[in-house]
Length: 383
Image 1 (cartoon, helix red, strand yellow):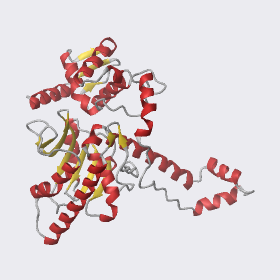
Image 2 (image 1 turned 180 degrees about the vertical axis):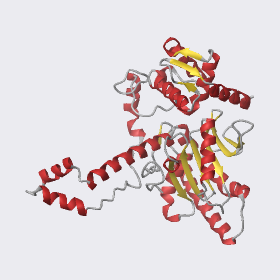
Image 3 (image 1 turned 90 degrees about the horizontal axis):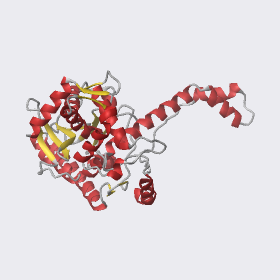
Image 4 (image 1 turned 30 degrees about the vertical axis):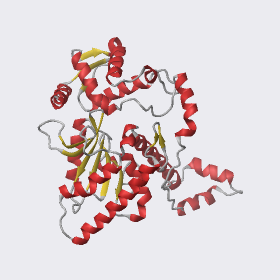
């Protein structure tokens, strides 16, 4: 879990009492209930494996996966929260679970039988391809014991798309397991914390790789700094220890993040000034904006000059997602562009990369045939 091959870097585990804008990600009672549920599923896994029989996929979902999703705050009996056998278009193969918010899938969960290994790359590739076509950013591949979390939109090789991998049956990593599973909770999904921790782990990897490179050289500027701070060592004497050095650069299992309750007043002041750093809870994600943006463009002839209609686009999308004026006015520290405008612009870039918007002409937002097909499929699905 959190090794070099399990995502963009050593994963910064989530402190149990890390707060979202709506309070604790999972309140203490829910968190203890999740821990208890993990222990019960662990016991069930041991029981099933002791029988040495075949559990099968359906029984794995009923006995192991659904109870854990329920403990994470998802009502697995409510289709508005969890849609079973979800199809993006009628022709698609179904995905086992789609975790839903505001009528749109946010996370896909693909289930395999407990006795199956998750090493078959075909399963992962199929799941990620399907998620990308459906505009879903996050996927989980699980056999009820191991849970692999993937960023479907990451522009990286397959293994580097993996954010984390945890196993319920590993009692020694119980707390770390629960911390990571919390990122799949309904509350964490509402607050887009998977995106936040993907970014954090990407930064960790970059910093770690730079440090390893500096230490392996050694980098001349680093060697000069060491020599300057030493007690009269020569350049040759400084180089020799670097040749013997075998640095182990691993990040702490648990990254301490201040609880937001202590920063609520500064945050409110920042909002009154119309400036805020970091995430802005309450704004829809880029993934959630994709189809509405395409639909808006199709409804306005399929091609617009963003300079002429940009404000109308922002207003119409804000109305669709019930984004209040106070959130629409928020800007990043030191920038004039609003977060809302920036998010719509980056959503357009994602659609360009997917081939659903033509990005060849500056200032012109034009829907491609692929984008029109996606709008049609979304309309058919909702009807």
